[in-house]
Image (cartoon, rainbow, N blue to C red; front, top):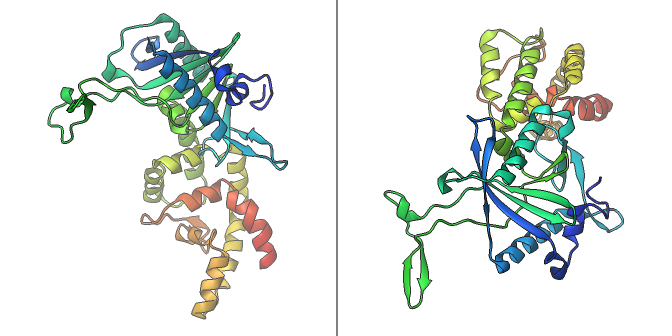
Amino acid sequence: MSLNESDNIINQISQMTCEQLEEVDLEVYLVSKAKLTDNLYTSVEEHLDPKLRQWVKESIRKELGRLKFEDEDGRKKFFVSDYDFELTKNDFIAKLDLTKDETLIKKKNKLLQSLSIGANVEDSEVKFQVIKLTVEDECAYFIYYRGIKQSAMTKRNVSKMPTIRHGDHLVIQENDVVEFGGKIELIIYNEEFYIISPRTLEYSFDYNDHISIRKDENLHSITSMDFFDEDPNVDVFVEKSNQYMVSRRLAGIEPGTLRILERSFVERCKELKEIKEKTPLSPSDKKAYIDRYELLWPLFDHIDVFDKKIKIDPDKSIEPLIYFFADKIVESFLTKEFREAL
């Protein structure tokens, strides 16, 4: 069911009045990870006073509203795109179908099972919050990856001491603090994840393991291609690919795209060589020319267009090269707009 359908609980909550929200059931859980057990998670339910319960529900409604944007007809709606391994697009929510990933659906089920079991969880062990909202027989889960702020009194060598006003005096804040509200990071609805913060998905469900597998598979494919030059060069590329953003983008490249890259690499080098050779000598004309090809120009740091080889410059970012491998520059610019300009 689409997020924008009138029967969708998430869409319903985003449009409720304060009076309607009072009828929505709310449950709050603080969750820790139990990686060394079959349960994977342990949870404890927290009970809130009525004013705080209502505030949390209104906060979620408000944040859902902020996730809506106007379409071409001026109507407010959620914009949803399928999840890939890169960061979510601005103004879009990324949808991940759990039925296609047995490991992830198992972790999701383990998390929800832990909510019904209950356990003793130390404040220092809490990793994230799960807020469950129920309307009639339907429910949605909102995840916030944040722990509990421990009192400064339990820490050694604190440099700042939080205080609260008690009557006419300021006294030390001795209790741990649980924060609610703020931007929604992840929503679980039926067998789907709606992702606003990819890192919350990765941290809450250790999903970076999945990204690492895809990244390593693509790394092996790319560095095994004939155009990759010598072992030290491969080592530099592998080291740079471990950076967070690069790693995600590398993992997102489809196998079919890499096959096309291998077949077309020599042709792309010929095109890049032609662009490089036509660089004007005049400084002003040269600057304008480079600006024209600003998306392609960083490729010359890593591609020897004469030997038709990848030769990584260790001092330069490899992100432009990852875009090249992903066919984002090749298809959208080089083979179309830029070829016509030659």
